[in-house]
Image 1 (tube, helix red, strand yellow):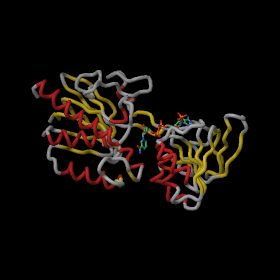
Image 2 (cartoon, rainbow, N blue to C red):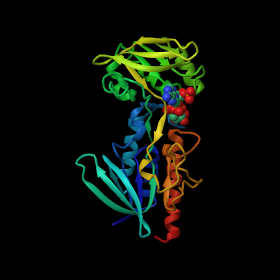
Image 3 (tube, helix red, strand yellow):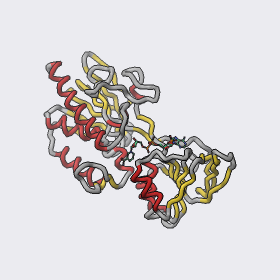
Image 4 (cartoon, rainbow, N blue to C red):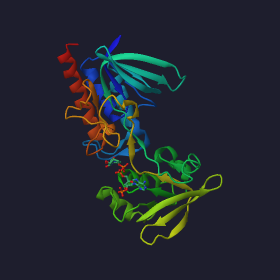
Length: 313
Ligand code: NAP
């Protein structure tokens, strides 16, 4: 069987594309490398989705799964990585490897929507890799409960950093947000909430140098970027939220990426390769939100439908 559309990635963009493709009765296969949800699995609450007051991320994922389960033309495969996409005889050959048993599979599709999202960036400092799982974390929802009454150092000054600080404050005794500039990048409302919080303090114009400890994290060495003085902050955990890198390495050579690896598309979400569309955080775009990822997914599915109609498939 040849699919009409292969959707790579099961985050908000990919799931929305699947709903729209399924409702257009396209034979659709969604391949997700872990569990559906994408970056939403790393967060707890969404507060800025219009019309939905304080949406629980996991609740949202479950509702979307239910919507998809009612669409007969949509197949969903989790724990499966797409290694390669090739253009073969007028369609796309998608090569996958199972994360469960390493088995390889190939399927063909007339079009592809890439919605692979992005992976958390690392600081690249000494101690970061060594203490992953022993105090260093990139996911507040996953690891927050291990830090009850503990001191946390949190690196980053964007929306993710401040939102996760506000989540972690329910467990932690104290949170120190370390940010490399004087000004935070995060939305004003998040800044205001963090500034007002008696558990949260800031070390601005400071950069992490090394994560310290024996068997587990015991502190972080930081450098004041104005005085160049180094100092050790005692802490039990270091959470890193310094942005994301797009998960697009497997597409190199097939379509145009920008210098940071984001997929370049037109307003129809079409990439430089006819028949391959992109949606969500893996795509070069000005504003990454759940609502914009969903919007991208809907447009990509619509454009794929039009593309298939033109090809008379
Ligand atoms: P981001 O906006 O790119 O912010 C990354 C932060 O990390 C910046 O403050 C940056 O500092 C800092 N940083 C980057 N590299 C660093 C390094 N090597 N060492 C120290 N600090 C470093 O990333 P994000 O916060 O993950 O957000 C990503 C996107 O998702 C954004 O578009 C954001 O608006 C969106 N988002 C939205 C929501 C929401 O609406 N509720 C929630 C989460 C994320 P500089 O500021 O100096 O560059």
